[in-house]
Image (cartoon, rainbow, N blue to C red):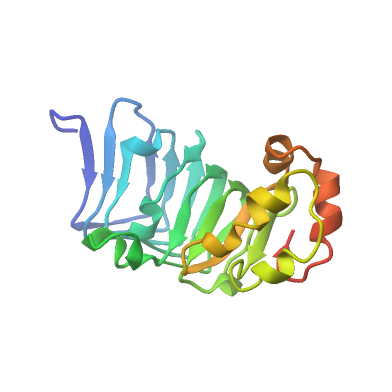
Length: 210
């Protein structure tokens, strides 16, 4: 750690290690030119304390001990064969070069990754093939091709305020959005319904995984 409180991993390859990114007073910077293979990364810091810049992760496990909120830096990572545990809300993964012209978000990708032990709330997969990914099960649910299927999803009555607030706005998602994962428990609490009422509608669609 330098005098600014930065812990920097760059210009190197790390393999078969356990990296604990848990100092709440540190700023962790992963990249550029970083390759991490077969490692476990334990994250317990706020989003503003974590930066990913053109880093490559292969067959790694991410264990998130503190909910990671509104974190877009995953699009600065190439993720292959990785596993995710913990709570993520408002996070984006994959390839989204339109997000910024800065180099860090031009090379992002995600494939063969497993979110089944994670809890995702309002998280998007961008510009990648969702068929290679494993998504969390109920009470999480994943809308595939949310923009392309927006009209179909709007064709039924959703409970509470889910229709006008969540479903009717699908067409406003960024063009590269290929999947959107929500947490039924969180949505029910925010939009005046129950997970059971949500599931009754979700079960009608083959474009929703749960």
